[in-house]
Each structure stands twice: as structure tokens, then as C-alpha cells.
Image (cartoon, rainbow over all chains, first blue to last red; front, side, top):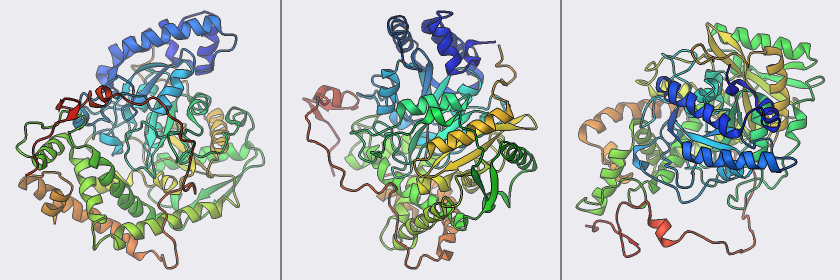
Length: 488
Length: 88
């Protein structure tokens, strides 16, 4: 038994009752990372000095303030695409090795404001491009439930560390499923907020029209507490929604009685492994038993969503990553004989195979002569995908499906085949194209591997996702299970 | 094609790297060609979600980065300026 096994509200009670201090809690997280992360590779770096400083400050607030924030003194990890002032931030890429941002991302600043304690920067696929964490420029992360398997990506370090109890919660980013997929593979909760619900200021961009920051945590309530802290308008990100954040905490207690939940036919009719299907069907029965009505719905443009995504995302990548020039940050090639060669040497040395593929692909689909056939057409298909969701949300409160068609796959299994890797995100990426809310919640296991259920809600429907997710979590009753070798 | 893309995107791919990436790009393009089957007649393009346009805020002056902070991560700088190899 470790303190890291406890939920945020349980830890909060312990901290307030002085059963343990934030300094002790951070020490335990860092000690576990020190002794156990050699096997997992979930951290790119721990931040013991920052953690100690923040934990001391949190202990003072816990002693002095009548009502300190829920996250005060709670250890958290930041996916390495989030800028942390003075702390090396690489986005998992060699091209940013040594980069120490001069400012904090808004989400990092908001968690610090509430007294959360940063224990480290979490490994991820390079610039968040990947579904397995094997594209990290530094090291792969493995799945704590089976160390021969991937944790999912791209927020795989965040998910694996939460599952292995090396941090209480972590932030990830979700561009096509990068929070929900590793949450499903590692048996934790992951939330993808609606586009614009959470600030992207200080988030190293992958695809700017799709990226959102979201929490990974052991429970739906823990995820809600982190989301409530980071959500809301930010004057530094003009794409944040000005709408006030709804009562997310209240949603957890509402239950699902009387809700209509849609099961998208296209998500369940083909390609699901039997074990995934079995867990999903149990979740459906639990929700019905709790009083929800389940109906089949259709999202007919799903068959084109993957193709649209793999045009739009690389297109945005090719323009966003133009800033990775080795001139203003990263090791660069300042001794190159010409500026052109400096760019080419820095980018050739700094970018891994997947990033090169996507930059090349994005450059192609945006180039004159191909723009209309690929990029413009993909944007139109994006409209169709969004319209599908709008139409079904007139009839149902939320959608439920498996998060992924399979459980965690083996390391190396899909690295040779980019298309097989891309298909991993088939059930998650339509939500990014449409900008709607979603989460993945652990619902059971197949052959010892965790299986997540995905809940999709309307635009700014985070409360609905949490409400349904909490019901699945209560019925599944698996969140206290710890991967063997990480328990105690 | 790949040589052109490598040049455009400043990827600096070697001949061997170009040879490796070409079939991968071909396979991905063949897969995304699925898009050509979708009926998009009369459908508007979506570039972003959320419906926010021309978002304005008060022109409030905040402290920004100093030149020193802005240059701190540059591999080469001199006299408060970024230093780069000559354009040829």
C-alpha cells in the first residue's frame, strides 16, 4: 500500500488532517519513480527540487488557509509538450534537447496556482505524434500491466505513471486520441475536453485545430478535479471558449437514470476484439441497470474520418513544425556553411521517422496542385463528421463505445506499418475533428489487460461525459487494482 | 517527388532516407484517397471548431520576455541578436 494508491479527495483529507505532509507525499512519488521507473520509462525527467519547493509551499497553505484548493499538495506530472518555466521541455524530440522555456503553459500555471506539486515531465511520442510512445526521441515507455506491451500514445508516459502509482495525476494532450487511448491501455481515466475548453498557451503545437490538454488520473473524480482547475477562458489563447465552465463536480453524483445513450453502429460493428466486446457489453448492461436507455445510432461519415484526419493533422504539423529551425531553440547547427544547410542538418538530426513522414505528407497535401484534392476535401469531410455528431446529439445525451478496438499491443508490433498504427485511433479521432468532449474510463480487463469505455458528449458537454463515466466506474469497481510489481 | 518535399520542408533527407520514406508516403496517400469517395457537394470546409472569429481583447500592456530571456535558448547569439550562418 502506497499513499499514491489513494484518490485525490482521500489524499486531501489526509493532508488536512496532518496524517502526512505534501513533502512526504511528493517524496514518496519521487522515491517510487526513482526505484520503479527504470522499468517503465514514463518520466523524461523528474523535478525533485521544484517538487520540494512546491510541496513546502503547499504544506504552508494547508496549515494556514481555511479552505485550500482540492489539488493543494497533490503530485502531478506534465506531458513534455507542456512548457514549464526553467525546466527542460523537449516534446519527446531531440530537436528541442536542452530547451528551457522562459514561461509556463497556462495549464501548468493554473495547477501551480492551486498548489499542485510537479514531480516531473512525462515521456511521449515525439511532438505527440503516435499511438504507442515508441516514437519518443529518447526512450519507449512500456505498459505497467505487461512490460512487453505499449502504454498507448501519445500521452503514454502520463498514463503509465498514473497506472503504476508514480504520480497521482498527470496532464496529457489529445489530438486524435492521445489522452483516451493510453488511458484505455493503462487502465486509467483520461479526459479530452472540447476544443477551446482548455487553453493551449504554452503547449508545443502538433495540430492546432485539434489539440486539447486533458487530465489522466485514477478516478473520474480525480480527473474532474484537475479539469476544473485547468478549464476555462484564457486571454492568452483566443481559441478558448468564453462560456463559463459548468458544474463538473455536481455531475459526478447525478447518475444516469433517464439518460439516452447512443451506441454508434460504425464503432462496434467491425474490428473489435472479442475481449473488448465482452467488457463493453457488460458496461452497457450496467448503464441500463442504472436506468439509462441505450439506443443504436449511426455516424455515417466515420468511414472517412481517419483519412480526413491523416490529411488535416499532417498539414497542420508541416506548418507548425516550421518553427523547429535550430535557430531560436534546440541544439541547432550554428557551424553549418549556409543557413539552408543549418536548417536541414538541424531538422534531419532532430526529427525522428514519424515526424519526418508527417511533415513530408503535410507539405504534399498543402502543395499547389494537391491542395483541393486532399486538404480542402478533408476539411469538407470534417464538416460531415461534425454534422453526424450534431445530428445524433439531438436524440441522445452521450455516446458510448470501446475506446480502442484492441487492448495494448506488443512493442514493435505496429512500428513497421504506419497505417496499422494510425488505425489504432479510429474510434477516438472523430471527436477531435468535431471538437466535442470525450473521456475513457476503465471498465474491466481482457487477458489481464485493461479495457476502457469511451464516452463522447456534445461540444462543451464535459459534465455529461463525467456523469456517464462515473456510473461506469462505480459499476466496474476496478480503479483500486494496481499492476503487479507496482503494488506496495 | 520526395526530393522536392524534402527540400520544401527542409528535411535534408539522404538518398537512403528518401528511398525508405517513399513507399510509406505512397501507402498513406493511397489510404487517404478514400476521401475522393465522400460526397462533399455543397459542403463547406471546416478549418476550426468553436465558431469564434476576430476575438478581441483590451490592449493591456503586460511585462514580456527580456531580450536575454528570449535568446537564452538560442545555440548562437551575439550582441543581443540571433546569429545564423550566411544565406547563400
